Length: 276
Figure 1 (cartoon, one colour):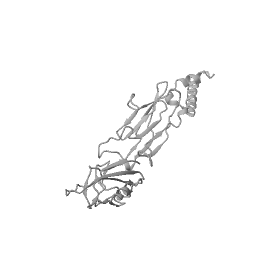
Figure 2 (cartoon, rainbow, N blue to C red):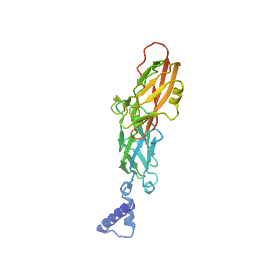
Figure 3 (cartoon, rainbow, N blue to C red):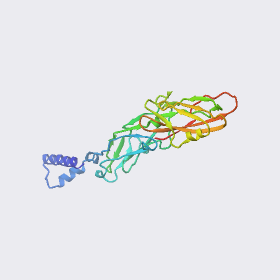
Figure 4 (tube, one colour):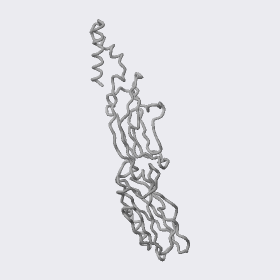
């Protein structure tokens, strides 16, 4: 930083005067050369607070840049603190990648697919990355950019799924919507404040044209399904869950309608896909 450099030069000049050096400009230059670049510069990252999803309402990735990059000397390099070879931190959910030339940090949710142990998912990440800024003279600074990255509800809560349930002609069954809390692993209903509706593509209407009757509890997502009287085979349809933070997931159902007097399966959503 220019102001700091001037302060250092002034201090060096004062020392030269104390030792009786002639002030003709040379002393100032020598004093400046003895000051490390780490003492002259102070990298500043922009502060970041955001929520990441997979697409749509919340972006999948976000960048965090060095605000005063243009002030730093050429050939300054940026490394992850504690690891001179890696440029990425990835726990299977959030990946934070450092650009060694610009210092930019890109936070990406599910960069190589989402992988985590149920019950161990984080709800948010705070000040995740510490950067070692190495200057051309070999001196360095350590910077921990302030960041808070929240995980969208549609990622944090997983839709429970099973196989292909069977329902007899004309039979009515209730299908509960169950979700898994990514942080605790607990299985329960959708979080309070969620809303569950028919999907926007008309798949439920198509199933109803085939003779099915489908009702949805918007607060819980529980679904009442009545099978057609005169048709058999698989019926496929979806609902949409909007979580309290505004992110959403699609829940897919595949139900087999049969005319055989066999036991009806335990009914749960047959599958899900995520979007936010």
